[in-house]
Image (cartoon, rainbow, N blue to C red; front, side):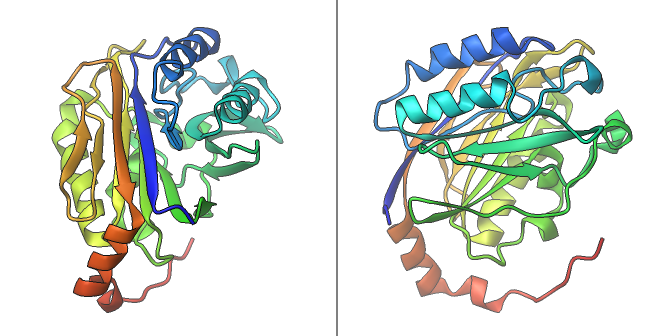
Length: 260
């Protein structure tokens, strides 16, 4: 088990439906991050932007983008995660891919489709939460709209780090920042939220405002709005566990059952 984990989130102005340009951009940024990085987090649909035309960009799990993630993870000996458009058995998924330094792949399909944009009409929702075991840390990776649903994110698995990757528009950015802190506080967990910036093909504006937050809701790293760049911090599992044991809040949570 590793007590300390060095996390980096990359905030980007995504090229619309252009995987090759986006992969080139992220590779350039990865070459600039510290060599002792343990985990890299990319935005939602990091190869395309939040497109409702999956037929234009969908890839298979053995396609160029997942293969690139595996290459980055193995060459740099870190874990890397982001979501992209995946097709499987004639269905489309907004799928989060988590790649370990060994090249091992784990996936999570976005549970809560963003109905305001019609995501539920073109993408199939997932039904299983993913808890990744990485370097002795339990990590729960979720996607964008999932942030609004605290029951789905509830820390019933005793995870240590909660990840949100997003294309969250500037018009609702106050909710983004507030809810990230709420999820950290109620779950007594580190939280990293990585959002995109810029303007997409549909003329929606994104301000970024990516954040790395501790288990008390304190900001460890952030980016000013509209900036392209990285957030980074070293987090400590020992510090988190000591406070959890001292306060005991997670021991008093309500039990519940999620039905589909």
